Length: 215
Image (cartoon, rainbow, N blue to C red; front, side):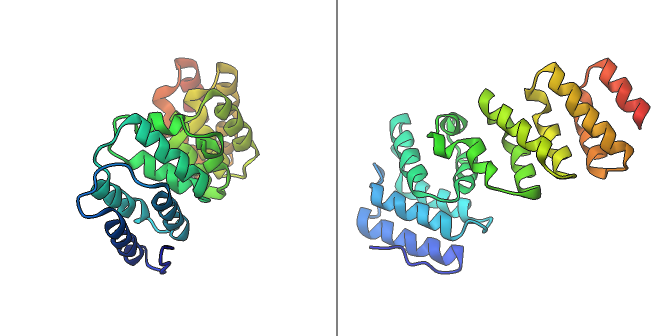
C-alpha cells in the first residue's frame, strides 16, 4: 500500500502512523520491514522543506522500533539511503536521533549518502549553514572537497563556509582562509566580521594579532 501523500507533514505523519500500526500492530518493537522504511523515505522527500518532518519521523520510530542494535540501525540506514532523494533530510534526521552512535552512523553511511554528498546538493546559505553544522563529521576526503567548494562560493556564503572548515584543515589552508576573511573584512563584510569573532579563540597569537590589526 502506498503512503497517502498530503501537503501537511503532520497529517501525512498520521497517515503513515496508521499504516505502520495496521501492518505491525500496536506493540511492535522489532525490525521494521523494508517496504515501510521506503514509505518513510517517501515521507521525507514529500516534506523535505518542512522543519517538523524529522521530529515526526522520530516519533514514528520511537513508537514502533524499541529493540535496536547497531546491525538493525545500519540496515535501516542502507534502506533509507537507497530510497530517499533529499539526503540532507536524512542527515538532519540522524543527527537529531538520541542514539549514542548517531554520529557513527552518519560516518558509516553509504557513499551516496555521505555527509558531503547530502550538503553538496544545496545552495547559498542553506549549504553554508549545513557546512557549519556538519563540518566536524566530514572525512578527510570530504574536507578537501568542502574546502574547494567553499572557495568557489560567492560572498557571503564563502566566508561562512570557510570559517566552519577552518579547524579541520592544515596550517597552510588556515592561512589562506584567514587571508580571505581579512580581505572581506576590509571590504566591510559583516559575515567575515561575525565569523572572525566566532573563531577568534581558535587562532594562535600571531593570527590573533593580524585580526586585531585589521579590525
